[in-house]
Length: 289
Image (cartoon, rainbow, N blue to C red; front, side, top):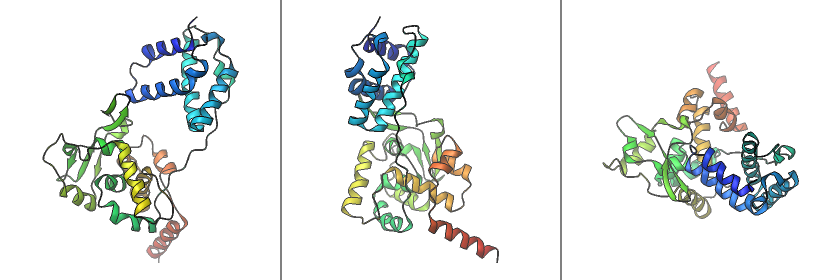
C-alpha cells in the first residue's frame, strides 16, 4: 500500500496532465506546506478522519480559512480518486466537514472616491486598464500592443500573464469567456495612443501582475485620501457597476467583463448604494413627468 505522498505523486502524473501549470503549482504548494507534513509519510489506508481534521486545522491557523478550504478540496479530489482506483475502501475526508469561510465581498469605488482617484489613475496605464476596461491583473500584464486596435477602438483579450514555480508565463484567460474584445472608452483610447508602439509582440506593460497591485496600494497610501482601502480587483468591480448603473445591457456587460455567467455579473459585481438608487429613481421620475 502506498503512502499518501506516493499516491499524490501518482495522482498528479496520471490525472492532472491537462490542468493548467498554475493550477498544478498551486496544488503542489498546498501539498508541500500543509498536507505532506501531516499525513504524507502515512500509509494511504491508515489515514483517518482525525488525521485529515488536524491537517485542516493547521492550514486554517497558518494560512487562513480560505487556505483550509483549498486544502480540503485537494484532499477530497485525491482521496476520492484513490477510492475509484481501489487503493482504499472509503475516503476519510467524507467524514470531515468542509471548513467555513466568509469571503471578502468586492467593492466599487464610491462616487467621491472615484472622482478623487481618477486623475491619478489616468496617469498609470495599468490602473487605467483595470478601471476603464475592467481587465484582470493577469490580463493587463499579458496584453501586447498587437492586442490594441485603436482604429476599431477595441482591446483583444487573448491571454493572461501568471506566476508559476518556473516563473512568469503566458497562459489562456481564466475561462473561455475571458477571450473577448473590450471596447475602448475615449479616455483610455487617448492614454493608449500616447504610448502606442508599432511592435505587436511588445507588452503594453512589461511587469508582473502583482506589481500592478503594489502600485495601486502605494497610490492609496501615499497620495489618495479615500473613504476606505480598495483592492486592485475593486477597480474591475467599479467598471462593471458603472456600466450597469449607466443602463448598459447586462448581457453586454457580462461579455466585456469576461464572466462565464450573467449571475456572476449581476450578483457579485453589481454594487448599488442608496445614493445610486436615489439618482436612478429621480431620473425615472423626470422621464415620467
